[in-house]
Every structure is written in structure tokens, then in C-alpha cells.
Length: 216
Image 1: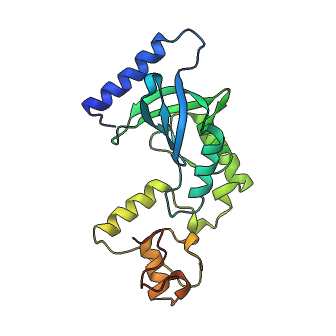
Image 2 (image 1 turned 30 degrees about the vertical axis):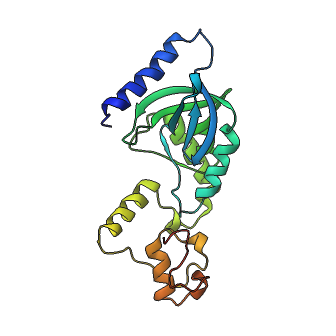
């Protein structure tokens, strides 16, 4: 990943903090807020805040199945708790990318084991995560209980969304497979079900726009 100057300073600060910590002491801070299934805001020394992205995994995006469950699970694991960080990188949003631990719990591994996130194949190096994902898939845990057509990795979903936003042809959808806003993966899909399939329940307020959470 390309890093910017301020991002490099951020990463340098965390690494320096780790080096200065007594042997065996936790390095990190207290989690103030969980943003989604793979990121949160951390309070560090001096009361400053840092945005952290969990390393080697990718959680469902807003609008995808299990997005809210992944966020709730992460909140249950880390929110209000002191966590230890093992820095890996800084992403293009200036978030610290790190493996995160609460006591002996590896947060990335725990979420993968529960079937709530994907292993981010492009960046993952920990073979144990891939093994946990295979186990979750075999047991049909979490998102692996979904039909194959609805298991869209977040990185592919983001790419499809950006192409649709740029005016490319929308993905093919089929009437009859879904009936609720919570099942829609994008505004384009919600519009298809409203306008083509006649699923008027998606436009609860009658303004002509389906699923206000997706179509703003």
C-alpha cells in the first residue's frame, strides 16, 4: 500500500510507542467507538485518537448481509476495552492497519472463526486465518450460511459499486429472490426490485426511492 507523509508519521509513532513499552506490557489503548466490522477509533496516550483498521480481514460493507452483525460482534469484543496492537501498515485513509488483541484473543481470528468476515486474500499472510475460514465455511457459520449468490466478498462489492457509480452497466438481478431492504446489497439492486419487480414495500414513505438506508 502507498503511504503518505502524515501516515508515515502515524505509523512511526505507534512503532516508537511499542519500542518504548516495558517488555510484556500491552501497547495500544482503549477503544472508544466501533465504526464497522473491521475498524474502530482508539484512544491513545495523552487523550489523542487514532483510527484503526483490523489487519488481514475484510468485513461486509454497509448494505451487505451480516454487516451489522459483524459490527456488533467487533463492538462486543473491543468497545470500551484496552487492546494491544501489532502494527502492519497504514492505509490510504490514514488508518493504522494492525492485528488487534484483547487479552489472549486475536480479534481478526475470532471474527473469521465466527464466519462474520472474509480473510482479505490480497493482504493476508497468516495461514491460520485461511484455515479458520475453511472451518467456518464447512460449518456454515455466519455469512457462510447464505446462498452462494449472496456471498460477495467486500472488495468485489466495493468494486461493483464504484463501477455502477461511474455509469457502467449495473449487475444482473433477478425478481423474486428477495423481499426486504435488509437483503439488498446496493441501491441499484433496490431500485431494480422496486421499478422492475414492482416490490413497492421497499418504498415505505412513498417518495419514489427504495430503501432509504441505501438510496440517499
